[in-house]
Length: 429
Image (cartoon, rainbow, N blue to C red; front, top):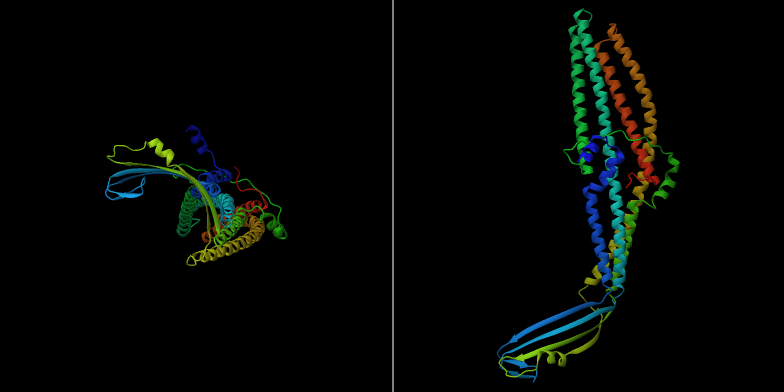
């Protein structure tokens, strides 16, 4: 508990939040259970290649008219009999259905693992996106707090100047309204930050009541341009978990289709077993002993069964068509995943480059707006500018700072995503 408390007091980085999320997220945990189901399905498919062994024990009490198994004649004497049997059967040929089902089960297991990795990456991506959003609102809180402090100082200065007759009551009222607006904006940004942190905790499955502090992520770089998009797609398509999951899903659908067609072929199975029985007429003075009857009535048998499908009300053909449609759906899903990955890579490269350019331009704009805001305040102090001009220029400056922060965080997020498509994982074990 001491270690947990000490760890909670330290700011969490984006990597730490993503690592925590991929372990505790509910969707990720549910996919772990799906993998266990796929493993059980594979075990069941392997078991179909083993013989089926069955043992049986039966007991029967007859009263009234019945057949005497010793004389094979009718009798009215009450009798008791029981039987014992042990048999084994093994399918020899069934249209390669067992083999295809085993291959489909293995493909499903690989598909489940790929989908688990894709869910982990998707969870990490959503956590990173929410983390960046929370950082934006946290930065806006700092900007709004600084603006409110400046408005408070300017309001106090205006009140002093009004007392000596340099400013009027209208100027004081405008400055008081500006301070109230800045105080409201600070409260609004604090609410947006709290909401973003609540969403982040939900994605991480982090205890809602515990404190979670975040810190700015480390800067990352990527040497990519629009000309690299095609090569990056060709590289990413080989290890992207969504693509791999769709490929394994298509493979499983093809094996299931082959298995369904195997039901149209004849099947052959063989079996063997032993059986024995015991019979006793109740109230009869003499009867063979239980041991002797088990030995004398024991028998062995072998059998072979050839089953030829002739007509089963078209259910087999309907199943074949359904499995064929599943193959077509899997092919379409794989094609969609490829096109979606290509679109995401092109979109991310474009957004990353645009955010980089916007950051450079907004940095220059913030510098210009800062100078203009300071000059306007100075002119206001000298009586050469009105309070409305001061308020207008202050709003322009705070909007520029917020846009600069947004461009910087967007560039950071898009760069991280580009590195992910390049092969650098979003999170580490």
